[in-house]
Image (tube, rainbow, N blue to C red; front, side, top):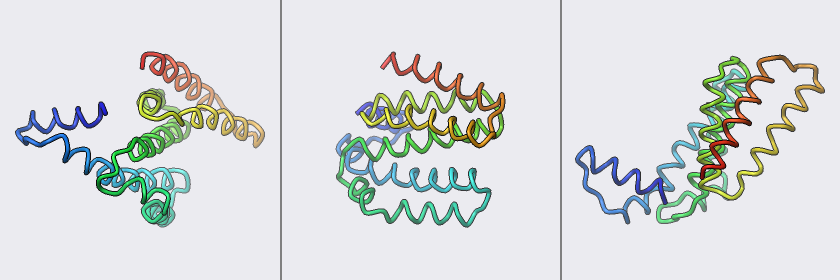
Length: 163
């Protein structure tokens, strides 16, 4: 709901008057574009190959369960939430690879927005420790991973408590 109001105010500020109904109708298809883009980026970040990123975007765009949530007129929170889920994961993986704490904080910001928009946010906060545990078991753990996870967990939970 806040997202559509923000989009409406932004468009009116740049001189495009639009009814909130049209924003609600086209919100899911608009965010599905970003979901495909984020599927491409996160897969490319993990594998380092453009081909696998394109395949991931293809699979997301043709997934039947996501198609039903991203059609025009389907005003539900899943279209926005899945985009936010992938944004959170993308910046988390990117910050683990680079050790950049700003990217970890950006991941936490997207996580807090995900908490505000979707009740399934608990999957994310439960998935990241499992990922860290797998890295520990595979002996791939280092200080970059520790600092990334600590920043994500602290900033993400502090911001989430504000919503």
